[in-house]
Image (tube, rainbow, N blue to C red; front, side):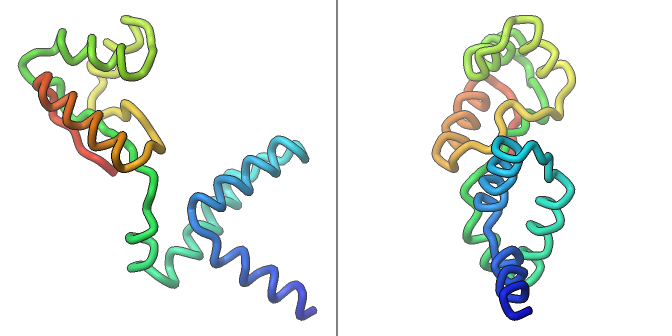
Length: 126
């Protein structure tokens, strides 16, 4: 019984990155898609240490909130940044607010944000 309690405590204390890695292992090696369980474990772990979770955040989503005045330049830049086709890039820009890139490092996210803002877009990091 003690082993199960230890295991439960380990699960609750996983970081978001570790939960994502665990989900990948379960999916690839065992064919289990643990999306709901991963969210529950991540939420449970974050609830105990809200300040720690904020400090540990290492992956960011770059959200395009508005295309701004130079929509064509923003579409071209989104196409370049994502590797998508022109139609898909235009769809992202037209449906703002929309994620341009997800789960990227802080440095990469800030670089993408800066590039998009230079092109005239409004961007936020989450």
